[in-house]
Image 1 (tube, one colour):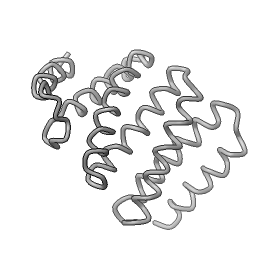
Image 2: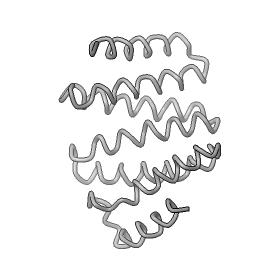
Image 3: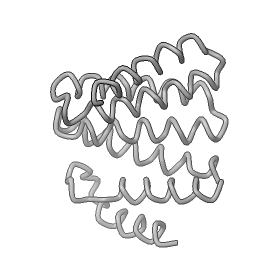
Image 4: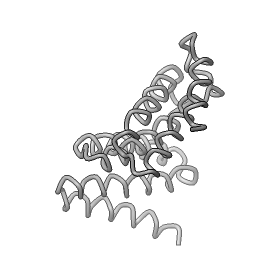
Length: 153
């Protein structure tokens, strides 16, 4: 699979352990592998590459506060979806809550650039909440997403 070959190349690029270089696309290759596995219905297999991509983005975000926050938030939401579809429901809620928190911060700083991603993150959090039976909380979260969507009409 091409995504696996990209990961092999990406690992060679990061052998020195420096994951702060934005051009190093190991995290992107891992994300793509996770998406491909999920597309084939291999949701449990898609979790590990999504987790590894998230950890790389977490290290990048920690090394340069503010510079990689969106790059960190996107994999949080992606991992939440992978976990939910693999049956790791509580973990999915935790990841989605963390992602929403980051996107709320980003949207507060630049609504035009980030409110659409916040809306998506809220919707995915709502799905995770439904999956664990927290339907009232899911309604509240989906109402927030709907309000953001309505603001653009």
